[in-house]
Amino acid sequence: MRCSVSISTTESAYGTGVSETFRLYVVDENKLPAPMPGASDDEKYSRLVKAVVEQGGLWGEVRLGVRLFAQVLELIDHEIGATGFLPVLAFNNSPHDILGADSSCPAFGYFNPEQIRDLQSCLKAIPTELMEAAGRNISGSVETVFWTLRAAVDEAARRRYALAVIHGTPRQAT
Image 1 (tube, rainbow, N blue to C red):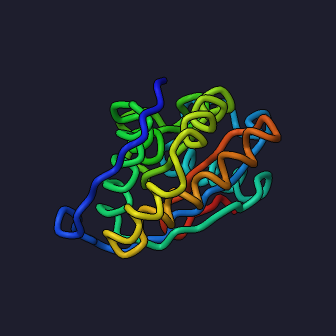
Image 2: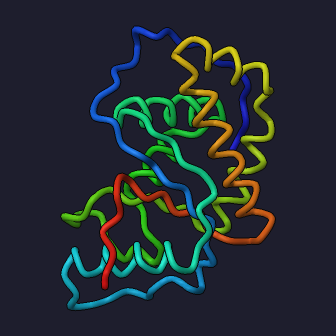
């Protein structure tokens, strides 16, 4: 992954959409469930969320419109020289591909420990001033997402853990 360092945004480029809370959990990948053949999508999702919440540590929360959250991730993604890395993994990825690409589950994001190490070095290469300036352009959203993400990524990298992104109010197995 290459890291570039320029940002330009305008408030009119972003819609807000329905607000949702995005929770970032630092979690040991080895404590998450393995693939569950035969389980329904809902069962897989519930078990996965339960494991993340019980085994992981909540490291940050962002309340934002779904579209705006995705667009901010796309902006940061662009700045690290990636093409869809952040938004795809933050919205449609799970450990061991438990949920698969075509599940009927709510969105779930996941970055494995290797991806976290790569992402950490790229996020650190983005100058603070650029995030602050971009944040002023769209009501602080870029800066809020960037610093929340960076804090969670830094902690996950320090522990050699993964990062899970739970969208909305998580449904857990009981």
